[in-house]
Length: 185
Image 1 (cartoon, helix red, strand yellow):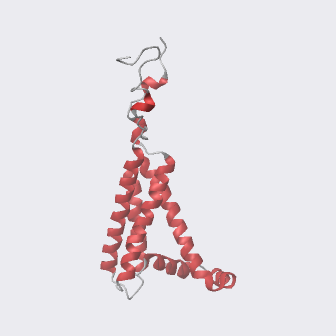
Image 2: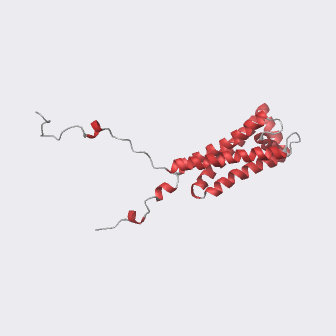
């Protein structure tokens, strides 16, 4: 009798980690959920600035003047939408990476979401119209939603795929074995 390497693996080993693709998607959706919550509140409350716009403004303020002028000359009036789109793409990619990290080390993925919220609050603190304490609270709620979504989606992704049930007629359970007559015949 030969032993295979399969016998050395624990039976639950494959279920403990989500597949890589699902983990990346979980991180992407978690990041999007966190941003959606914060942006929704920012749209409803004047005291909470948009963290996406705040990060965009911080990027504009920190780039060299020649780069800013080049972007305006090249993109024209589309410079701000392109910048916002870039921020969203980077946020999604970072979310996917955090999902991959959370696949093995959940606290690193969760901490990354909280760190992104802190970066957004730091950028938004430059806006004199916004309330830093309220913005911080909203960002923490958004981060909490993101962490919760990440945890939930990773838990779903860890579940083994369901095997479709076979009905009695398809399995042959309701038919007599071949070569035998039905009762009463």
